[in-house]
Length: 603
Image (cartoon, rainbow, N blue to C red; front, side, top):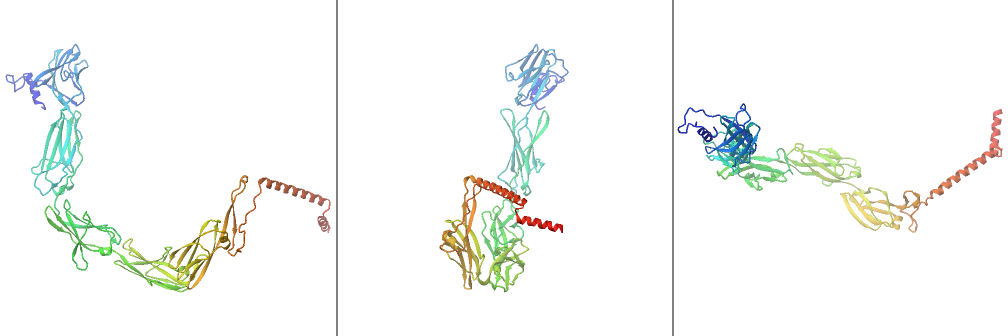
């Protein structure tokens, strides 16, 4: 029995307890009915079994306290009355069968209750009230300090707490989903209970164990098993891991990123061991000349960062670790780092020149630890001109001058390539991008006039008018000059002219200025604004006073309509008159024509 003292008190009161002196041993023990209820709910205590007669008019209810009966409720003539005490305000009578309802059940209500019926006269009926309360979700706290596996002793792994349950739940510990049992010198579970003022229990369970290296990723959790009137239940905590410390047995070196590396990559070299925690590391690199290992400087995380990686970073690297717990030094196997490169791209000749109509040969070379492929590209357009280390340029034209790119690439290493620019000069006098062009301008506004010329040697540009000029070299043989000027009547008359000059000759671009004016119509015309332009020849006379021709003002709609109507009327009158004279024979030409036709018909 869960309450032996209470049961013994009941039996002693009935003169049936075997431990009571002077009590006959063959006295029959009264039956005790089990009543279950959850904390906070209402417990129903019925006076007798279900097949007992109803209409209890005189009943007294007791509970056992310290081996004596305490009266808590009376029923007289079917009316209930609570006795003063702890149950005074929580007892009530339900139904005609003298069922006693105990509300707001607590763990303190776990007693044996006795119903004594006088009308009808029945044997005393005993009930044992058992109370249940599900514990809260268990919480678990892992050992945050960690456990050393080389220490031959049990260490605290985790603590599990289940609060406010009743009765005391059972705790089971799990590792990687498997239950743990007590095992000498391996596993020990220590639990204690705390009784709250409410009568509920808080269970605290500590798992102590001796861990091994393989437990570094083990998942621990606890499970609470408890019972309710509805049956058995369980609640699980979350899973936790515990830091497990163990010395390293080997050390190795890792290089990131993995795969073929090239110059410009961000490369990291780091050391790792199979120990925990990771010890202090030192990274060494072999000197290519002396073959001696030299210590390299690492960052605060012990990582050697090569950013950007260069071909001189290639070589043998090695890690060393020192375990401060055991003072053991371990070394890794040497590992080779290869930084693929393409360098020293050269084009011969370095300053190529050719005559217009002639030919030219360009040769490209480069150094690399990989097999290379060569491509030739036009600098401005990116046009592929050919593959291979040699480029032949035949029948040279002026437009063929300028920049050429030689690209040396390593096909086995994606993204590894280098280019070299060379400028080809086509020897000849200056030539202009445009011989003559027109610009639309407005008077008394500032405009930018531009002039582009090419040649080898590169020419210089001059203007025939004053202004603020700036120059920009587009490549080794092309120059762009921009002149900022104010549009004046004189400039409209003369236009502008730029001249490109070099030791081999000169050339000119003429800029013709076209004047743009806005002509506004009368407000009632409903027509859009019209543009009026005039062309000024650069050879116009200096004394010319008018360089602008305006369109005549359009007539109003009314005048136009009247003029059209008058024209139609005049044409109608004129047509009628001509027809009249023709019918009267007054028109000689018409008549002679008619007579001629009659004569021909008769013949």
